[in-house]
Image (cartoon, rainbow, N blue to C red; front, side, top):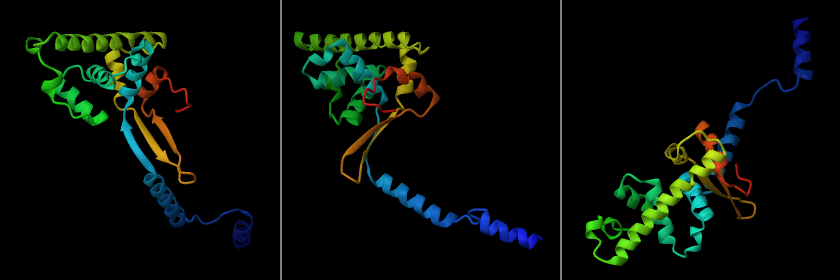
Length: 192
């Protein structure tokens, strides 16, 4: 009877043996192929968020990308001027000498430098304060600083599709905090 049952199971019970080695090999191959097609990985949640706010206020009408980078960098790294310079290098590949951008007010010898410093500080403050609005509207329940801290680890990957050579970009919201602040991101192209 046991032999008859075993025969029936082998013939009518579907797949009886699991071929982990072949499956594992295929999964490893698929993973390697996917990873080899990754074009870039950016930890850029803060930039995505602050760029949206910067644009929504209308500062994008100022045709000066360095101003944008300085403002975003100052809001992202408000406690350290050196961290701001490092941020500009890491995220925008801008080599900037700390002494050429941020001099203490007493070293601003020209009216133009004073105005530039005040302008950067004003726009950075405006962007920071303007971020309070979508946080309140979306009932995020975090301060601006906490939302920016959560955004610091949001990652975007860009993958080249092997079929046609086009690229797909995906912003990844992986943690619980990422999901809490996700409504702040206007991802109108359907990313998730």
